[in-house]
Image (cartoon, rainbow, N blue to C red; front, side, top):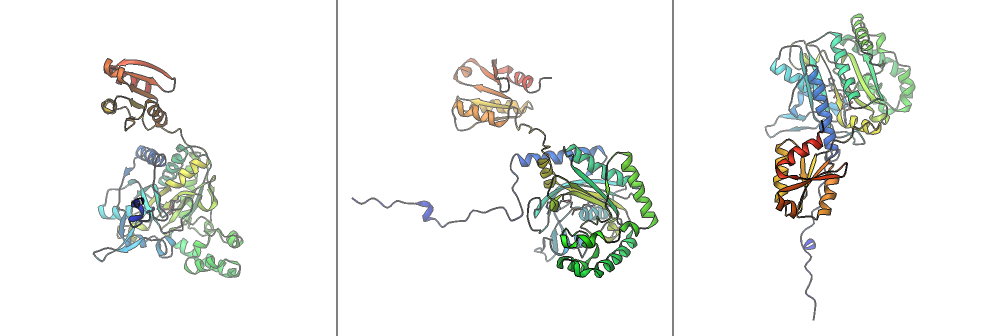
Length: 433
Ligand code: HAM
C-alpha cells in the first residue's frame, strides 16, 4: 500500500520573507522600553520643576523649516528624510526639534520668556552604528526671548543635573562661544585661510568640507587632520567684546554652581544656527565617535530666519539612546523597578485570577497572572520571573474556604487570608511603611 502524499502546508504556500525593522531603527522591547520611559519621566519632572512646559510639535514640517539649520550642514544636505506629499508639498521628517519649536513660537506668539521642553523621535539618514540611528529619541528644552547669560547657565545646569540624576559621573561639559553673527563669519574666513595654506596635509574629506564650510573642518576626527586643527586660530580671539563678556558671565555662573566644564574653542557643533554660547556633553565611558550625549547653544537669529520678530533663543537636546548607553557603560543603572507588585497564581481554572488581578489593580497595586491553566509549579516560576514581591495563590481548597494564600516571595513566608482581607494584606507587604 502506498503512503498518502504528505501535505506540507508550509511548502504549499508561497514563502514570505519575514520583515525586519528598517535599517537604522529599533523596536524597543522591555526592559529597554521601560528605561526610555523612566528617562523621559525624570526629564519631565526636572524640567517642570524649573518652570518649563511641554511642547509637542509635529514629526514632519515643510522642508523650508529645516533648511534654516544650515545649507552646508550634513543634516540638511545629506541626511534629511524629505519627500513630496500627495498635495505636492515638499516636506521632511524632523531631524531635530529646535527648528519646529521655533516655528511653533513664531506661529503662536506666546509671551516671553517662553520655556519649553520636549521629547520624541527624530530622523536622520545616517550610517547606522552603535549609538547612531536613523530614528533616535531626544529630550530637550528651549528658552525663547531671553538674552541674559544667566539663562544660559540655567539651561546648561538643567542638562548637567539631569545627567547626574541619571547616575552618570563620567561626563565632560565642553563650553565655547561662537560670538555674534559677524564674528562667526570673520572667524570662518580666518579658518579658511589657515586650512587652505595647509590643504595638502588635510584628508580629502576635510578638503571637501573646507569648500563648503571651514568651521566644520574642526569637527573632523580623522588623524590626518589633527595637526592642522590643533594649529588653527581660536574663535575666542575673534569674538566681540559683548560676546566675550557674555561668555565670562556664563562661566562665572557655572562656577557658582560648581559645575565643572572645559573651555573648548574648537567646539563648533553640527548645526549652523548657533551664536555665542555653545556646549556639548561628552560621555567619557563611550566610544569617541559616538560620545556626544547631547549639546546645544544660543541661536539668536533663528526666530527671524523663520519669519518672526528678532528674538534670542537658547536650548539643548540630549540623545536618549546615547544616555542609556552611557548609563550601561558606567554600570549606573538604577535597580530595575518590578513591573508588578503582585502575581496571582490560580490552579482552579483562571477565573479567580481574573477577579483578583482586577481587584488588586483597582486598588492601585500592580498585578499580573499566568494563562492557559498552567501547573502550580509553572505559575510559581512565572511569579518569580515577573519581579513581583508577593504571590497570591488560590487552589481548590482556598476556593472552597473563601481564602487565598498570600506569600511574601522575598522572605518565603506565607499566610492564608480571608478573601476580603487580601488587598490590605498585599498592600502591607508591598509598601511596608
Ligand atoms: P545635535 O547635536 O544635532 O543637536 O543632537 C543632540 C544629540 O542628539 C546628540 O548629541 C546625540 O546625543 C543625539 N543624536 C543626534 N543624532 C543622532 C543619531 N543619529 N542617533 C542617535 N543619537 C543622535 C540638536 O539636535 C539641537 N537641536 C540641539 C539644540 C537644542 N540646540 C539648541 N537647542
